[in-house]
Image 1 (cartoon, helix red, strand yellow):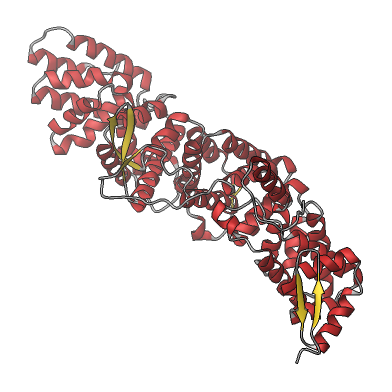
Image 2: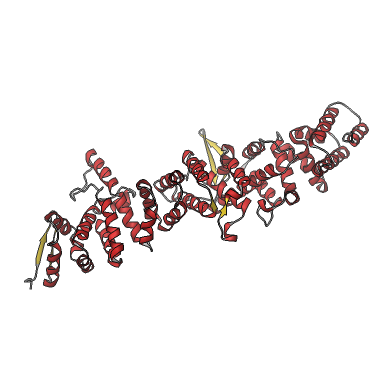
Length: 551
């Protein structure tokens, strides 16, 4: 019964073939190898007796067979690229089986290319005898050191098994330096499609533009740790950055980064600057930076899915400047990051925030970015307004000081005032004013006022039919808005109405070019000084009527 049984003994393992024809073929394969290579192949005994491997080995040249044995042996070293649980589940046998399946389906030229590259990675791997891991300091240190040398080979094997175009993959990798290839293989292992898209966007770029983005992406890739559980009931309170390294967050950041490069054409200098900036920022700021970039560009330039064409930012320098002003502003990033959370509370000296649902958090962040982007663009484009160069900082400060629920509602209301079907950059200055004047009047007033509740109270006391005129008046007042609000608060309905109407008329004349902002501002200064003194109501009305008369 066992006359055909043939036993094969390696250094650590052995196996047997019961079929004479099979053992004859195995002998022929082993005879092409050195003694050490024979032992290594036998140690990987499951594949030695596999029909696909035997067929593959018979197709390979002697050199290729030697390459394969070296690669298969190196794949037995557990790589240091997974979590502790995944490392325990690692199977060198399965990795070798995967490689055999891929090589079996390749043509001769592709197979040769794969073996050549894999052999180079295998040469880096420190191989040690298979034994039970002991948990003394030396053994653990050696495990980590050895494992790190196996990362490139493991990643390459995974990238090959996940690719639909292996030659194309090899061609693209060859355009990057060795360190960059290591980074890209890490991305490809985790998500082949994402890694391929990343290579598509960086292909042909200057190395100094490629490296910062790859450094950033690689750092993200190695820090995605755990799946988060979100509680949208308002019962759970968390610190602001509680999910910064959550799996969903990191994957989203990586996707947003690649999508930015696909949707917008950055030149090498712009790409280098963006990559370096992302590398320098803490995780919370990175998240806000990417959110501002993604939603900000969509707000200004439109959704790329509408056209299907990449937008060249060299043709939209003012839009890029607007986004840079926002995403490089620490106050703006902080406000955007806070927008994903609910009400703030203190406990034992620590700030906690209500969790929103993931969907609501995303919507509120997008709403905040759309709002700030719109205001930033109007600040750039609309001349002869009271908007100050520091308006963005003032506006973010006011919004940051508000309760989360009030802030979210205010931003939602303000965004409704400036909706348009066209990207903002496509609108003429006249169309901008027509579409966004009401919004800009309010944002400028909010930015300039010292006490937002006073502004809200004054609007509430104003007749509904005068609300738009009220906001024109407060925008015209600029940094004197608190003085104007004080006059409105201290006087009766007739004076309030007349002052609002008069200031709104001046705002219209200024917008049409009939008067300059400086002329109106000087007259307004005098009017404010007049109201600081005691006067009869008739005298006040008379003064308002002639305060802005032509000089």
